[in-house]
Image (cartoon, rainbow, N blue to C red; front, side, top):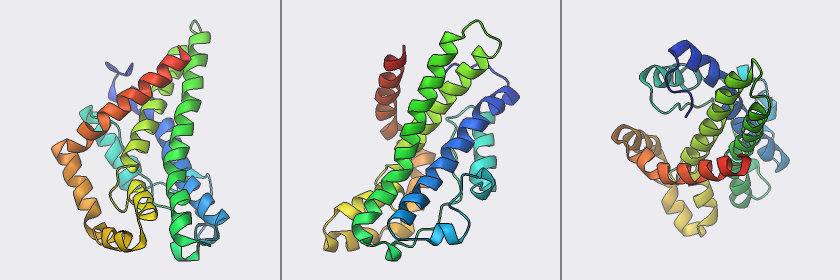
Amino acid sequence: MGALGLTTIQKIAIYAIPLIFAITLHEYAHGYIAYKNGDPTAKFLGRLTLNPLNHIDPIGTVLFPLISIILGNFIFGWAKPVPVNFANLRNPKRDMLWVSIAGPGANFAMALIWALVLKFSFVISTGYFAQPLNLMAQAGISLNIMLMLINLVPILPLDGGRILFSLLPRAQAIKYSKIEPYGMWILILLILTGALFTIIQPFYSVITKIIFNLIM
């Protein structure tokens, strides 16, 4: 990406807004779809809001992305999960699918919006804000596609795991749900070994290439 060669402070300035939008809208989308399908939990707890302060996790939203920027790795983070009581949904197993898809779907939509911002930065290429806007748009595309793909990995409690759970026959879904207590440990192991990004990279490359080809 075009952010190579920037100082740490410049990277923070470029990635901060796209990251906050990415995680805030991701969580809001989960809560909104859950609310529309019968679960008011997020609304009652004040989490059905676009105010990023209600979604920021000190570790996932601040510390982890900051360390990633300093180390020069792929920028990654998370927010406080929006609480969803699946038992409140009108059709828990079916509606879980739409609640789970909502977060990654919001990230994909934001990637497309940042692509339009990137296109705009080319239009005003001689303007003072053109380069910062260009770099921020690239960061927005990268962050949202990466967050979308990581969440679609079919491991509970990730969105991909819940999507798979909702699609499996009931008996198989119950058996599959038993891995959830170990899901985050599996994810951490995949991250530490680099296997997660090896799995995601081909999808990431294809999707970002399509987006950039569309706007160029």
